[in-house]
Length: 418
Image 1 (cartoon, rainbow, N blue to C red):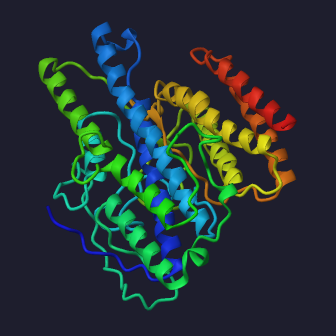
Image 2 (cartoon, helix red, strand yellow):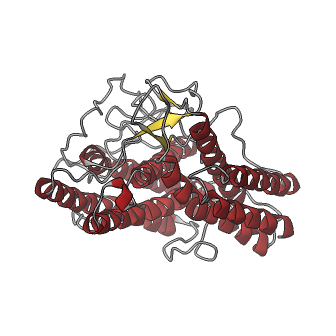
């Protein structure tokens, strides 16, 4: 197993840049896993037996477990950013995220559950130094190697090979900066602006205040993703390897077993930062449901960003922000994503169903930095989302959106009264 070369991180500017890349990768992986989960079939009416549905549920449980840990990793990476004085970074390029954004071997795309998706997940979560090819269709794009002699004032890209390699470079950069400036000169961000176990459920989620807590956060991320010191069986990498083995064995025994819907990630509108061919939704009803999903996703990011930049909120209000973000993701986005993958892309693509593209409309996405305005905007937006879900629930086949509308209305009430 090859040892990856050390990265040169000599300034706070470069460290912030690499941490924003880490946040984008954790964010992208989380969306990849959620998309695969949304594409799974859920009823016998979709051609699955009771035994096959039980198998799909077991696979889904693995994906959900990994997705939750990716959320934890994003929170820890954001804590690291906050600890060194930077703002949270919940933005990212739209999918597919090709190599022009990251080093040549790192590409992020939304793929329905199946062998190709699982091989892609395994590649992205592979341990540092492991020689492994990505899934078909993810050919690394060539690009010029960055100049990183440590003498630039502006941050420059680094050629990391794996997510673990990136985090080890961040850890080494923190160590160098502490040697130069001392811990008090590096960890200058407010601990109270970080995500902790008090408002999120993860017992491992603690504030980063010094080199030891930073190293512990990084070690947890790497250990859960690729494995601790080569033992990857219980890490994301090992879980996906085991899932792929089970999937291939099941398909070999039952060649007709198709656990996933025929889904493609589809945009309501083509984002200006996407150069690859993309599927556009032409069915009017599907477009409305996808638009609602994207708006809920954006509101989740806004609630999280306000949580990390909160100023002047009471402890109860900070808890409300975290709770709203969690409930939007778990109570609303998850069921709505599964509903969307039952709807057609349009008459121009017969038999193809629409998957959420987690669309970010670049000019319209904004953080909420001003306390009173932030709370007014969040309440207003949640009411708008509830109204749209309620109206769509009157359409045949979308009755379950009525429950989502009730949940959204309750969150709006919580924000107004916090």
